[in-house]
Image 1: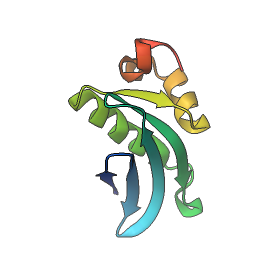
Image 2: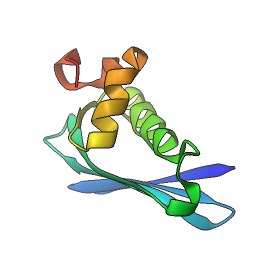
Image 3: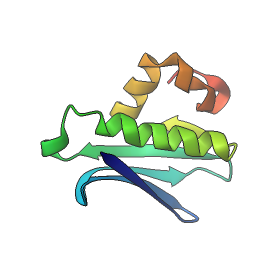
Length: 99
């Protein structure tokens, strides 16, 4: 089972994925003002490739944005592509525009 740990400070944050205590992936973001953040990097450990780890981290970011009334700018290619494929996630995009 994949577990997601969120850390956040005034300028940056991350969603770290782990499985049975082993690192599985990392998604980082940078704050762009008080109300939005830029997902700038996503990586998944090779052993967990193709197992949905990246999407789990992205869903954690979307949940965080929704529950805190924030918006997301998906700069990282993985995040951008995932937002484009899933219209139901686009409510958290800046200006509700497609990524």
